[in-house]
Length: 348
Ligand code: SF4
Image 1 (cartoon, rainbow, N blue to C red):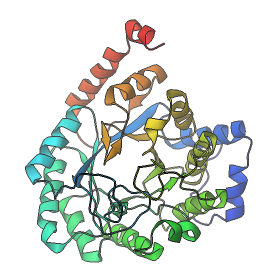
Image 2: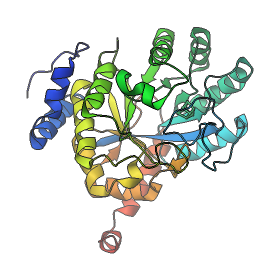
Image 3: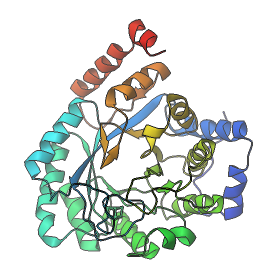
């Protein structure tokens, strides 16, 4: 067994580029070796994501169907009622999710919304689920309020490199994002922060994004790596596809640089076949979103995920700090049900 290296926060661009340039097999082997030092190799954490407020966002993120700046035909919805959110959380838990993420398309939450958001967090937490929210920019006080309500994770992505950022968003700055992440850390919450690839960025930009993430004062506990979902009506609808191997390399390099973080295979999974997803898991991805919708873009059918897990011998990672045997059992049953000869035959 190789020695466990200390976590690093001083990566240089040259070092990151050198990892990307490794022969594919060497890179994947190194990523898998690092992965096994910190995680069970056949476990993947499952999160479910619910859009609690959809569309009409004031920001102009060029990839996003929820931006009010583009006409994507998306139906707008106001902030969901607390009861509705809790019903969805219960359904997610029954299907095996261990974390429930609630996303609102806002520049930032308004003070009048905070009591409702805090009720949602408390209710979801009481079910024994981990809680995560993504609400846009937070100030220090809002971060404290959410922490007090029981919020475990706050998602706020850096999206891309600082150099490419201005091509993607003009309504807020990279520094705004770093400031929100600082407030989240200061409040004692865990950070979920990653980015999107396949937006027409250069290889250097992908390296620089991972360098930014790994060189934060603490590695984000969750690192979602998204493949751009090209949505009609957004300025990115015709961007050239990113080569699949480049995506897998991004996962592998993220795993090596942030060895204790959950690296999440996130948006864009619908365009990946099973074999590509399996290579991502081999390269150190150990978290997925589960369910039929990923905010407003498609997500593979939940049953397809269970079938893939069964084929690969992957088990859902369990929370160890709560007693949720019922949901563990339900999930094990679901996998067993999928793992039958007839299903494998019909899947050929
Ligand atoms: S802030 Fe979020 S919801 Fe708003 S446009 Fe950007 S990505 Fe979309």
